[in-house]
Length: 240
Image (cartoon, rainbow, N blue to C red; front, side):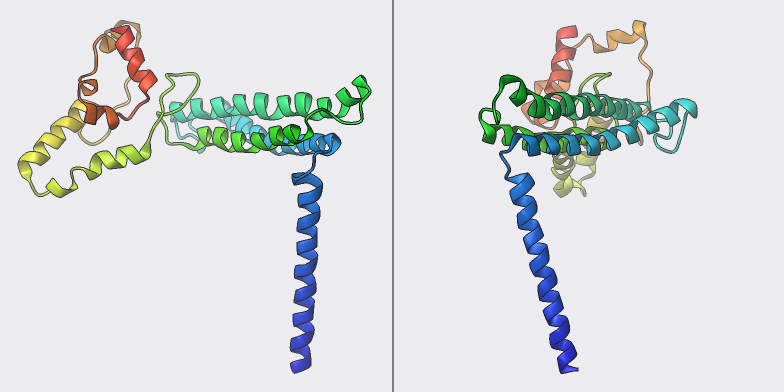
């Protein structure tokens, strides 16, 4: 049993040594590389992966169009707009652009100008590794809660931390009935509903709704906790 113990311990050491060597090889060959051909391969691999995610979003969109009310969106048109936004921006800026400007340019331009490598190779590598970070930030668009960031409707952001802070500031007064009534009045004036926010279809004659300065913008505290973006708030002021 002691021999078996040392035998398996030796096998485990060899396995971890191999994995560590593989890690160093991958880091040196692809992550830390300044060779334009390998950077081009990175671009192509990255475009393949993002293309799969963009194709998945496209499938969701087409299934929703074929069968409205599909399980992906459950009739939520705002989430549909979010997914359409994420799909369009991913396919353009993280599939087509990396292939054309990153992949093929890194392969072909050095040959066209007669050089062995591109100028500023480290900047070339950094330019690639910025893309996965941007992709992660952009892909979040399709998975945020509805009614927030989308390209085809009003571009409004949500700050969940500030929203939670808005409710946390009332916790110490939760046993005060008069304060609770004031809190309810504020919530009703914000959302125009008691228990859920009614989905309203704003038609052309109803745009007079936006022809005033929101009272919530008068107080600095409520401006901090304003659940939508500054640009949306500014657009309402401009429309007034």
